[in-house]
Image (tube, rainbow, N blue to C red; front, side, top):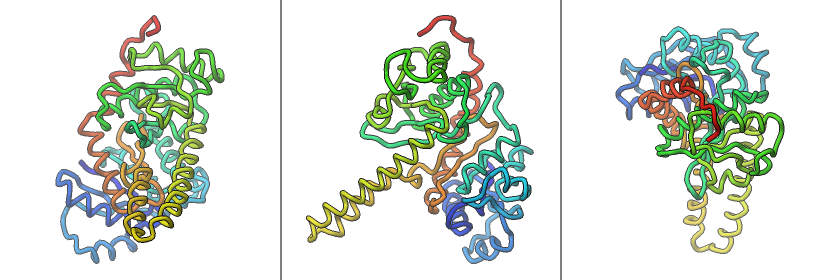
Length: 336
């Protein structure tokens, strides 16, 4: 499998991307990686690493989308930036996947410009995996489509379900729709119309209906669907809350266990890692005709390695094929 890695994306690029690529090459003999970026910056680092194999190559690009830049403006001014070149490689079928820890809006906007969508997909969405006491939950969408329509959200129910089943190994994922109440008839027009549409999809009794925000971490559903604006707010609030709670608890416990300070600090660090992307690698942009993994800007080499591993899994489990097949399945004429 040939994968394009945006070498210039991320807070600590390009070093973390090269280190993550080397970890992946060592662990996965079936992959070939293409580093896309500034050759003058990449070549000395690759040479310094000592890697001399044939499964790592460099495709030059000019510039990158900075974290604080407006994606559309940056892509217009820098048409040959690293993430744009990555997508061009996938559009021309020179690679099967794109991975980036760069500006999320830049990754999505560049992908949407290619119109590289799976057959039948109206709008791709980002699916993020959130941890909880009852296992993992897929939240979709978390920012790719803030102006979603009911048919977009209904398709996300299918995409998220396939992803949860094939990548997270949840045999029969329960799909819920985020709402302000669990009763039918609650919420905005968008949510109510989406509720009606999802009931006619080929999900059967896997669709459990509306799920309130507090049910996200309580394990009420394995896949929770929402529009990108809501999903992004939920994700950012969750990250902030997790960080704050870990810090408060760590300070309290560490001060009470001075004799075991090092053990306590490490225990909280380990718990905190459950909420970081370096354990899951990143979030897939589902619905594109190819594979795209979006990593956190603060990703480390392990996260990049895991994102590459997840991209391989998405291909091996034929996630795209299953999404297309399920979306094209006959629509039920009665509610489940």
